[in-house]
Amino acid sequence: MKFLSLIAALLLEQVRPLRQGNPVYQLFIRYAASLERHFNGGQGHHGVVAWLLAVLPSVVATLAIYLLLSRVSPLLGWLWNIAVLYLTMGFRQFSHYFTEIIQALQEGHLDRARDYLGQWRGESVAEFSSNEIARVAIELGLVSSHRHVFGPVAGFIVLGPAGAVLYRMAAMLADKWGGRREPEFGEFGRFAERFFFWLDWLPSRVTAASFAIVGNFEDAVYCWRTQAQSWAMHSHGIILSSGAGAIGVRLGDTLHQYGSMEFRPEMGTGEEADVDYMQSTVGLIWRALVLWMFLVLLVTVAHSLGG
Image 1 (cartoon, rainbow, N blue to C red):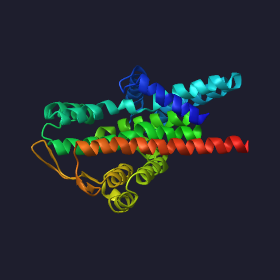
Image 2: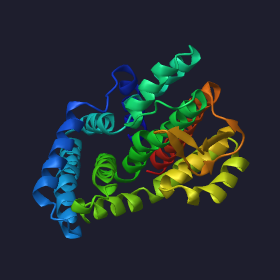
Image 3: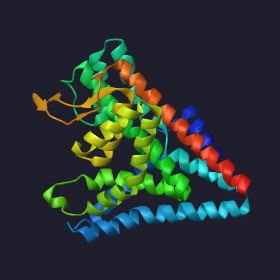
Image 4: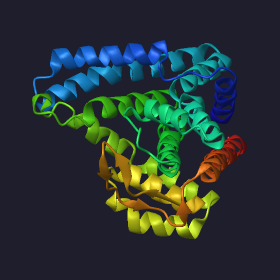
């Protein structure tokens, strides 16, 4: 059932992609903003209450609806799985940026590539060279593939549709509340940040291991062991170092931004990023997904035979 749900959701998402600015996501973002306004008193326990009010009703409702529909008909439960996966995962929620950047760089339109990357990154990249554009796009692609595909899939495999909803909502709140360091914001976002850190601890490592298995295993493991700790967000460092080593490209490193140099740790080994390595990144992500689907199929078949 889970294997068929994943296949159906992936196919549906390819035919009718769901973008990040869709009404469901916007509704949740507005709800989270309302909770922040009403509960943020600068204390950690305020953040715990707001997080529980943001996440638990949807997770419990998702589980209750699944159990109810499955009791009525297994087909209805399967369709509910597909609907939940369609809303919580998908390549097309980020891949259109990646595709447009590749095309712009291939055609030599640096300004257009910078515009797409700036929209994706959420800040100006007006001073980036073509190599810097490719490098940052690969970084965003690897991390986004985990956040939008492998992470929700991991949640779904372990906890069913409620797990996919839990992962997606926890990730969104960690981004919205967890990274805030303004004095007036206080400790409100601490719980969202720490909860997602532990929720994502195993999935991020499984994603990194998948990149190593379907890429250059030796270099991926070496970069993971020696470079991941140097990245500001350790889970991202694990994914980036493994992915960079798997395709043999250098990520991280210095960027030209705001009239100065932004120094970042170096990830990976090999050559400077370019359009060809962006294409290699697409192949790496798809091979990793095929590996995941194959393993889910094996478990499904084994469970059916054992049952």
